[in-house]
Image (cartoon, rainbow, N blue to C red; front, side, top):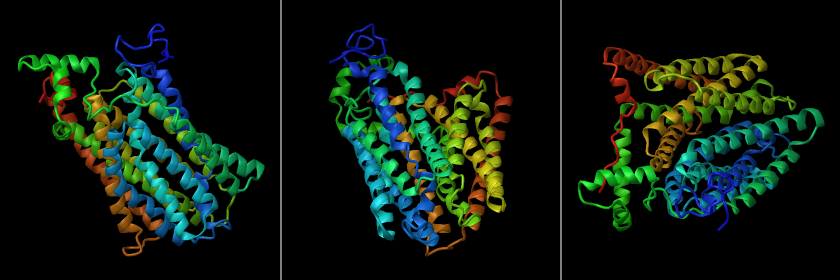
Length: 471
């Protein structure tokens, strides 16, 4: 047992008077996790992956990459997401984070030394394992820190990933454009970075209990549940130890049903899932679009655009977090309006022949998307018990992956429409346009309904979810 690095405990080996070891201090747990997140995302080869696979290094055709390689990670993620979500809580997060690190290393190694379609497909399968394990990365920190620090550590953990991705993209762009480094060297740097992440993952403190299955609750939640259960003559701590895992899972399922029974919660989750689907389709295939525009332009500024747009999106996310707006009233309308702008940007990005206009549209698309997904994230978090956040996050990701798999199967699969890259992006733009119509209609209804209602209804809408009941 050590001492809390955060100095919030006055040097005591515990926090808030609870018998927790030092790693419950937010700094001691957050620092290695942020290092892990930064290094795992700092992959300079990422913005140049299509060029690397279709160039002289791997000699794959754009048709093979589009229809045989890239779809692998979409379909694999669909299969892996639910098993990983269930195992994550059972194994208490850290082993799954280590598995994610191993998957990143395996994927980078296969990209670096492998050859042929099968090797590339295996690399993207490993990458899909890492993507599915993201839920462990984002949920781990809630199991080892005091709930008072949730907002702070969440911003650091997310910021570390964004900064790592941006630094990797910008580093790759600088090395290619100014130094003339080969893409093979960028792949080697990416392998070194994810290897550091894997080593760092072993230093993460092991959570004592899981958030779901072991009945871990914050002191405030324990108090509130105890109060609500006193009338029934139950003691919370005795209940948490005696209830079987099956009943806890049943309680979890019932709480999930309760969460999604709120229309406000449902629509924010819908945008989160649908937006994730559209974003990954655009971001995953935009390099093929740029290769189509400039087939032999090795000095393309893919990395710079990706890095700058990531930094801009991070700044927009922070700015949204400080905006003073009644998001429970105006949030859906804001989502609808800006989703329409996203659809317009994708249309223009696809139909223009000017690579710089396409770059600018992608910059706008990524910046706005990251701001909007931040709105959804904190609105969902406001409506949820923290213990249920990982569950809802995983379910939203699963639904988004289902949509992405369906969309991939329709527009890309060799057994379906087999659309050209230009027509693929027309479909993606139309997809976001349909989203904008849905959320604009819902947002207008919400605003008009709120205006007609009494002033007290605003507070009722902000607390739309009933509290979890006791078994």
